[in-house]
Length: 439
Image 1: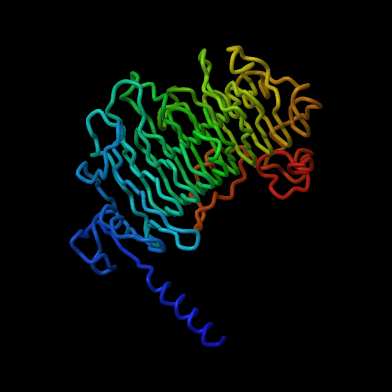
Image 2 (image 1 turned 90 degrees about the vertical axis):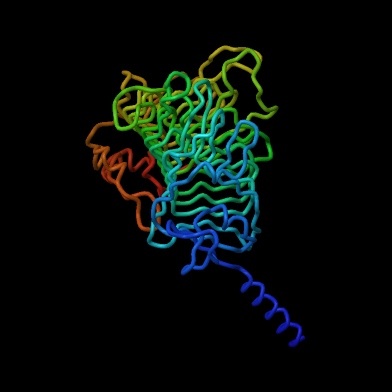
């Protein structure tokens, strides 16, 4: 027995040694060996070699990606980095920015004619992306279209961590298929498409969760921020499986970057819906999404929006401030009936609303008798909210740098004072450890 144990130990030891590290750098060459002292130049080269358990370390600097690096053209798409290889539960394939360095992939030169651009296309499973940025992703088609910085299209158990997608024309992150993926501590900002649809910017969300089948469950957005995206901050339209948005911030969406010039829809959290067409492709079982501990500030339209959903959404411990409407629960009557009705089936607990830009629109379009509503600052049994309930109303804090571990910065904005009755009631996004939360 002792000999058998030693044999298995040695086998595991040599298997662990088989995992390799590859390095890429702005001054690298794909003819190099891929070591830290002899790095590759492109993701393409490293991806051609990686196997389960391997890590690709990306050194700091700006990588000027060219059209020659597009790995695959698929139908209407140009897939710049086509990542189909998979890791395993215990041996992920990792694409990491090198510690204490911050690589940036500049996609501004990738402009394939009549193609939508996806910078990072993840078909593989058990992948982990961490600590880098994607900028300048382009749109060239002038009709209705979109491009994306990241798309998860079938990959399961992937992690997207500490990434930033900004100053481009594309959606930051977009999920269409795949289960149990985590989008963690990522930022999407300053994204606007001036080219397609007359420059309306109507397809440029920060984050999109749109699972096309009922098996694509367990997908979570956590600790993410979305601001100055010309359409919505977070969008779950046409989802066939439930999605969770947890501890995320959406602010200043629906405006052109760094301006007060209006662009497209501008909802903070658009958490559902299947459109208002005569024929709607909705699943047999309408998923119930969860939006919790989230903050929506000064989005052009709604802060938290049911978007004509065909069923209920769970809203827990969210805070809305100075959106046009802070909480809009409007539902579509049925798949067969193209009629908006007051929201039904929603659960709203421990939510906080303050000073919507439309008077008295703390919450709108809700059927109180057909929802589970308790312990909110709005109806029923509404509570008075004043400036004095908050430690700070300085919204500039929302753009503070993240912590060293990539988590959201500590802010006082919209944080309740301990003496406030709202704090004692456990309301809002900052009441994280209160025993009244989500009961």
